[in-house]
Image (cartoon, rainbow, N blue to C red):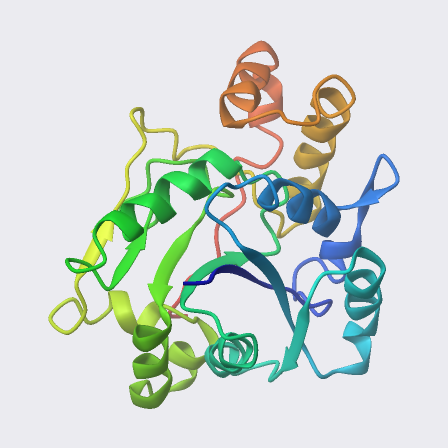
Length: 245
């Protein structure tokens, strides 16, 4: 059984174009994320799911440079992009990650994946985002290939095609859902990159922690923010884009 992290990535972000290839300490954000996901014990393979647009050629070039498998599909229909990527690479269990989470903690990934693998007969969809207790930027979702295929075949409407798993968690009567919670509610923290302010915070975090410990984890970041409370305010005002506008 192959468990693969499929990371959706593109250059055409509306609020911060090219964010995935922005650099900190001469390394792109996507490289940091790949480096961290590689350390997750439950992940057999990492696949970058990008688009067929010419503007995403630099992402493909980075994948080739790092010897990371990639798939190019629809820009807008991300659900089809995931389904086709999983089909192409023979993935049995899909771990959905997004490329705006460069400091995601591999231990958090493992916790969510293990919850799924230990309860495959009970749950169709396991994530740590149904009820948020983790910092935004630790987002991990897990589904089987069969469930992804079903969503791909059934989901209609642009919202469900653009947001890969929305069809699943918006139909709890049809899919068995499970949420993984953190011991403490740390959901006030925003460690995803969608704006310049988000990038400013992530740049500070990586620049401080990475040279001292390339394996820094979520708790290390929480302690760092505690020591530098003004950092929390850098992007605390940023609102996450709503699923339904």
